[in-house]
Length: 225
Length: 94
Image (cartoon, rainbow over all chains, first blue to last red; front, side):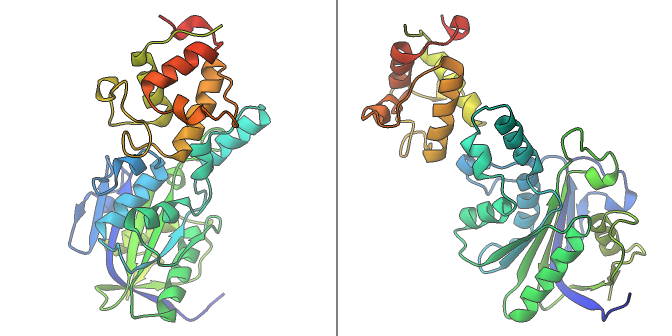
């Protein structure tokens, strides 16, 4: 299957891993374009009353979005394969056991809770969307972000992807299950251009990691153009 | 029959229930307002705390109770509320 290449103009990029991704190309550090870190997320800009409500996934996403300094007028596209699955599963277990559901867990269990909380901490009324598209969630989220940018190229679009390891018995021991997040600020004048091509998202490494490797200069279906 | 728990234990219970990661029991005053201008808790915290109190101490909090807001005002008022309404096991009592 072929299609015309989709080209994303990128201003800046950031990534965060919950643990060492064990990939020399994904070593921590910043080159002024891509800021990559792992360990403790930097959430100093988040009010502590709100910070305590953030899941590990939200913390990962907020770290990356915060690194891009995009708060304000940027529209937000959030993408995740599993979203707040741990909270949803906890709620389902409580319901099945006839126990009362935690209101705090419930209020932040929906798929759009990460961009929703992001809009609250920034007092941001710009539109956002939340994408879930199976193993292709990263790629389809990028397509959504590109569509949003092309609809109005006068302002940047903040794309944030994140996923957390699923709780047992659904946990995936491969790199696909690694807690991590990637944020890309789509806009002009671009510091780099990412060329998207159709590929089977179920084959090969996770799309998010392949994209980061491309941004660090590795051969990848995700090319810099 | 009520349940006796100390203000210190109530503070530990609030911190653990609501994930107040930056707070210690010593940092909360017995008479400090828990909501809005005091500790800064919100309506979701109130619901969370109500359910946790019911699970742990079997406190019966009627939603129509006109005194409910006062019961949740401070650590001291919550301790008194549990003392007069709680029926839980004495594992947390002094």
